[in-house]
Image 1: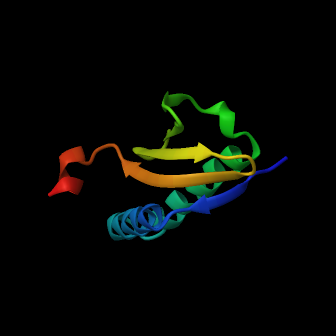
Image 2: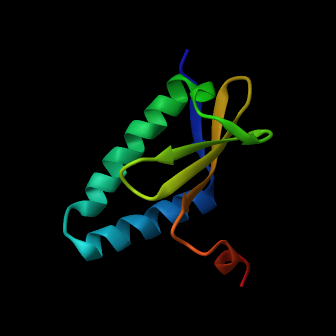
Length: 96
């Protein structure tokens, strides 16, 4: 059973920022990032418990090709993505 995927607004903004950053670095790299991200979303939706649960109730999927961490939780029938976090980013930056 595939779960319904819900991406919160903050995670969507992080995706857009990453896309624009990669497109600025090289045309087409942003598209590659989105394709890679979609593959992870498909994996999470089909098997959400595959990735480790670091801090309950959240799970974390580290994207191998790009330095991002997907932070999500599962409910009965839904996967909720809260963050597409750039692991190169200073965590304190969000609080400033």
